[in-house]
Image 1 (cartoon, rainbow, N blue to C red):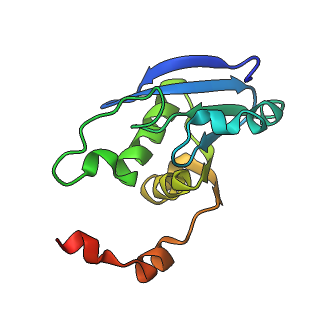
Image 2: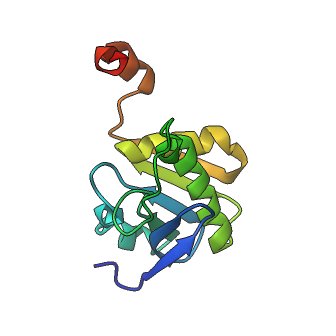
Length: 146
């Protein structure tokens, strides 16, 4: 699994991410969903690595990545914090821009990365994510009012 890929722990500021990366060419970051890890991409990553530099992190709080405190406002696990991790990872690996692809919960991180750091995202792919506006419109938030 992931033949030819490096497995590293990379500091990206407030957290340390477990990351598999390999291949050569333009960079593409693959972000997993819940409750998965970077291993979600084990069949896709080697195929993409024939033409791209593929970067597969465990998002903060998942797998072998840091699990920081959430904090009173849960900002420690906000998609904005995870998007900043993606940018920190690009910096650590020496990439100015990358295509960012997210699945499930990872698609929200990918979208947040594109919204907060548009100059760092060359392409955006979102897979199997409910549009956030629709999800909020349909949710029953009475549980949060307690």
